[in-house]
Image (cartoon, rainbow, N blue to C red; front, top):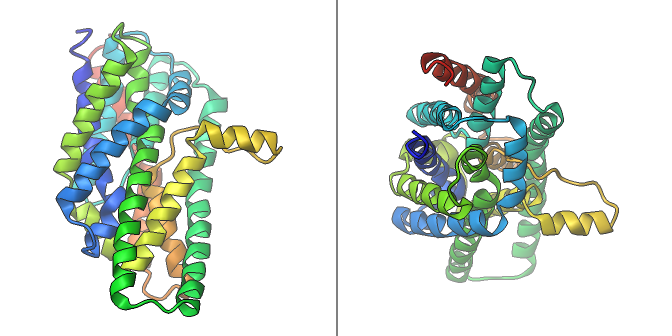
Length: 328
């Protein structure tokens, strides 16, 4: 049972990759600037690098949220989060591993009658609220600066397309690295506290599962991100991906936090941030910079409702899994 429980983390990693390729390269794929398979390969490599190099800070906060006791606890949490994430993909909604995993961990606390670490939980929820607005602001400023640059510097359309294509690749790779640094810990964290296996081994196993998920990503979620909410041009896609990467790094990088401490500036908590909400926020920022015309309010409302429903559903699913298995 001890190492068999890792199948829950494998399932959750697969679900993460399947759902989140849309958040990393969905706009680039949707505008046909990058091929699907190329995007998948780049995402796999960079997620793996981010998890190994920069994933320690968010992992530590995930571990603090719930004091899991047995491998069965980790399995229940992972399976619950994975099921909810899979259901989100089935309905074409860009849900996040941060929302489902944190919800499932809260469900574990509720089942055992234990109050979760409210300081950590409040930091996470606060980051979830701030993240989309920050991404929207970065994207709004980015698209305006891009327009000014285009007007000032005359560039041929062929040169512009090539520059945008390279930029999309770089931005997608940065976003993938940030996702690995920020979100992989939500999968590995529960296992690190209950399994004697080396941390690197667990991370590698989960990243392999994420890679398989990316390779079989759900194209309906890509459609939602790239076209259904707001039609994006290739240049706007580049700004969206850049804004998303910047926002994710602010909540992931210890180096940035150290710089802010030296400057005595406000700090960003190093907690798991929903990549989907950051991406949607950036798209909304682009739409607002264009006057809001073309923004599908109904699609946006459905996505925002899912941000509330998904964590609650994951908590309920986590409680149910423990109840079915007897809480062992």
